Image (cartoon, rainbow over all chains, first blue to last red; front, side, top):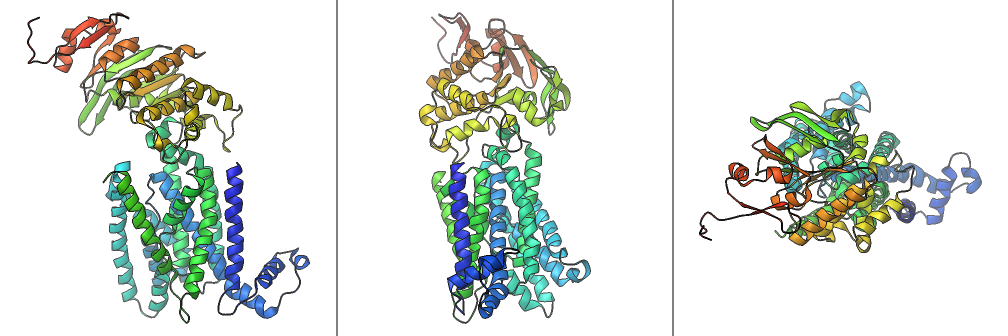
Length: 343
Length: 265
């Protein structure tokens, strides 16, 4: 219980501080005190009593230009990290994450199809995540079938199946992009992963998904702890193995689809963040999953701030930043596993 | 009490079990023996309710195994698989407390505080100094002890063991079997144990009754004295052992002899 306060509080504080700093820095620098005042002022109801009327020029930069992007980066980060923690727990595979499993690629193929085919115009804003979710689930099913029965030994097989499926869907998306006219730039940028120039509606789409999935996964966290011993142990100890697996895989895929629909493919967040939190706070999913959400939000927020500011006149796609950070980490995990198994 | 009636199962085309029946009375230490591929572990998995038979039924405490909700079944029946526990990163104490899962409500709380029980189990299995160690840092024997402790916290009426001594040296084998025996005699309500055992001598030492399975068929059932005869062993295993009474306990013990050894005394 004390651990929960330490890590929950610590990463919560980190997130708030990160948010204020990231809102402050940029092409026009806003003083930290101003950012704090503007945010307090915006709290509905009591806001005006907590802070005075902010400088309108600063207020526009912070609330209209930067805040939507910062919030979306946080939501995407939390979603991908939580999805990663869910996949890892239920598959007992520390290398699993929305990206390495190919689920993100499948979901992005579904989303790209929805964008290019004009489904969005016909069925509204939920058509993109819905299409991404269906494709994400199908991908997961495909990867699972390809890998065969996933025992502990076949961890690498599962990831290999993910790579195969990912290559296929990557080609499929490229094909769709090359056949379309007009929207290519937008699509390509989206595919590389970005939270730039997205309005509030994207956050409004992702936030409820994150909330629901987070509640579900925390609710199943004790069953997921039993999964750490293997499915047979878990069944003997009273876990409903098939139902838990179905729900957790479905929920993690849903969250992946949501994140991919609003921000494209941002890889390795679900791999890096849960692993670091596991090193710090231990493997107990009751603590791991919520803390992973907080830490994932901070991680992608800083990655996006780096994407925004690293080059003077140009933005780097966010997906590029997370991949540059994530792939060495992935390689390190693979090496560590090889050493542990004496291979 | 646990009973299986006319249990049959095919995996693919191959019949693994054919019309096997058994009844284990409450408080009995029951052994399932037989050659490799005879269907021992499969029978145990059917009894545990995680696998459903093609035909036949399993009764646990007078009720169909398939009628139990998973959590309620886990309060009646615990199982110790062959490979011990492996839960990377979890401490011994955390693993032990996972045994309480079937008694916890939605928020992970229990009506009664499990701490006294936890203390008692750690005392009985000498796990106190390991309590805060991570499970992956333990030796095979220690891990198996933790696995047993976890099933003790589950407070079952029936304990299923699948070759629990496979990866243990003789010292740890006897230690583990003794722990189970002591648990059985110390529990207030009768604890029924059903164990798949590879080692016939160990089975004769600890089991009240034995079931001999060969190629999915029950070849015989009875006390170790009744069942472990040289003729029957030769028929089933294809090697003729020397059967002698144990000098202390009097239970039958098997001595193996090579076909090339000289038969002159």
